[in-house]
Image (tube, rainbow, N blue to C red; front, side):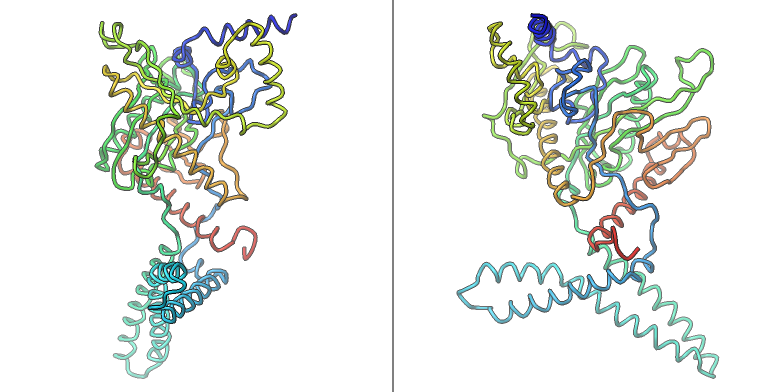
Length: 483
């Protein structure tokens, strides 16, 4: 009897509250994973799956960088595995070219011919630069003889020729490495940026507002578009949660390394005794696909409307302008283990005893699918359009995450609790430094960094360079060998 009463109380508490209330209570929901599964289960659900508890853990799409040292081009080319890989590509190119030449004009093997032609066109630039590198290395070796010549003019000419060969070799090697690193499908996409206050109360919200402004300035500096989708202020001018659509050339490629927990150390404006506090905020960066590359079946959506809260005058009190969209297939029970389903099934029997509809089960246990909501605009149509944009980005990000986990089976997706210890970057105001803990890079002048121009761009370029080298090491199979 005590258990049935507890279930009844739990159902009443859950089903009676608004779907907008989690943010109004100051809930720090971070990324799509937490908001996907619904903001219904809370911290009191001791036995709930971490993926279902919005206040428990946050998942970030960005993998932590595994390498700790950036190798030079010469060091990379000195590795035996790279030479073996290039020889393998040369062999594949010759074999594919032979098949294309032998089967040209034949009726059989059309599909194989198409595949081989594609491989030839893909590998041709790599083979061209490889042969150019061999030519330049041979010319460099020939300068050794000229350096031993008795004529001083010939020796001077040999020195100049040697320097020119060295520069040409470095340029060709860099081109070869860039060809070995594949372009990811999402790199050319636009993105949806989400920021959420973490540990630290009002100070965390103030810092979240500063970081959001930094990204807005960075987008303007890069010439990108920046459209605010959601903006939820705190009482003293900070920011609980905000999201924006960022569009521009290579915007996702440049911004994807910003995803994670950002930590700030400073004396807050709210601190009266001058003590330094440590607060956190979280950033999610989701690739934004186009409707052509990623489509959503309208039958899979449940669209809800309600009165919006916040600014808007009498208009928001008279029209259902706020929109909430739920993607039902992602709430399928098949993704959860059988033991938890049995536990939920037992509780579901109690729900039927109280004559509750089956939807109450989904509301109580969070299996409601990916959720997107918007009340930023006065128009319901515009809010629906923005909510669909965020929903498409979340679903696309989930698909990419699944593909990434298949490719990088030996790695784990970065998981964080928004705690102070699980950070990707620290902004230390007393020491006037910013440290990125993934690549151990430190830059100074925090205020200039938060302007969102050259210093932030410098950090992003360094992260991209480390990431490219890590991808190359994965391709060459360098995780456990030749190190």
